[in-house]
Image (cartoon, rainbow over all chains, first blue to last red):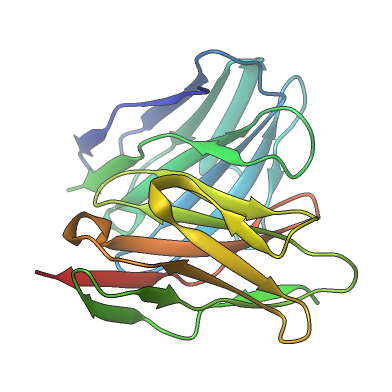
Length: 116
Length: 111
């Protein structure tokens, strides 16, 4: 079946540094990928929709200059957390849409980011 | 406005007993409904979906869900719970450019 690979699974970085998270669709092409943030014991918060070959669409309240999204190919989207701060510590999850609208999303296994 | 609600933060059930995780929705037009499961420190896994057709939808790992239009509900069910079913369950509403997730329900199955 379809698989979405997310890397790294966990990362610890110092405050002020930048961290890049990769999301790859392994056996299908994904023109659209989604980036979520999940706080402990809470639901998923959609951060942005990543569109191959065009700018990402950010949800209200999400700083596009802080959370840089690049979708340079049909199988890869990246999220870069720039100048990370402890409050950016969270669980980040990507998902990819395969095929037609309303087909199930395929999720990566998430990235646990800890900023010290 | 479209929305989906999971009224229970946690559901506790003994192994072998039937389980139900509740979900209600609000949408203009036909709903597209999904259930996903999340294990600790993992992404979400698709369980089942309702787009059209039979109101009883069967999915992975023995789960099923019943679409009830009059009650605007899409409850997740399983006849006999397993300890390994313990996880976080999300109901989601589609039909637009993005999926709307419920707040999640933690299912705890006790041996």
